[in-house]
Length: 198
Image 1 (cartoon, rainbow, N blue to C red):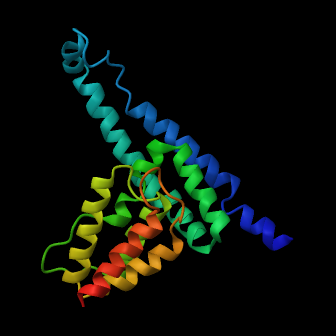
Image 2: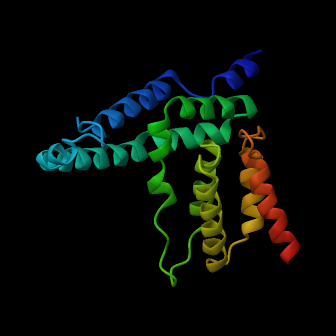
Image 3: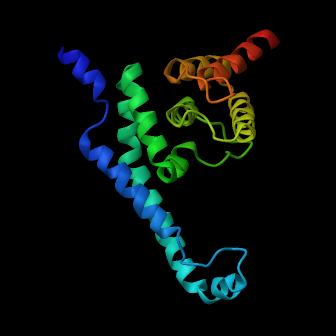
């Protein structure tokens, strides 16, 4: 019974509150108080709020860095330690807080490394883990580009992309995403393609 309760609560109330609080804060920072974009006064208002936009954008970047320094490691640890129900709890929390879900984890994915600087296996594992937590990408085209980039980076770094994809698939959801296959299926399909190409 205790094990079942542990499985049901993958996250502490403090982490759940932090995700919701940061989602609301980022949403507020992304709102510049502009009229609708297709309205007559939009451009004038946009130009008049140049400094406000710059200040809010700078603060937003600071908040994202704070998120990745504090909340992201806790989410990643909880996701890895949880069973299927706990992982679904985390995915549901992210779906309920789409602004937070869109932006968190950028520091863990990082920018593409220079051609002469290979990536560590843990960096690619972190990127795939965050993608699994987000249940892939909302746009299937972004997902294709992301997985293509992952493969190129893994190949350049001399890492086993197929194995990394299969490890990530074990932590991904097997629920279909509308008319798209599950993220687990998308990862395994990529891994199978790599296996056939060997």
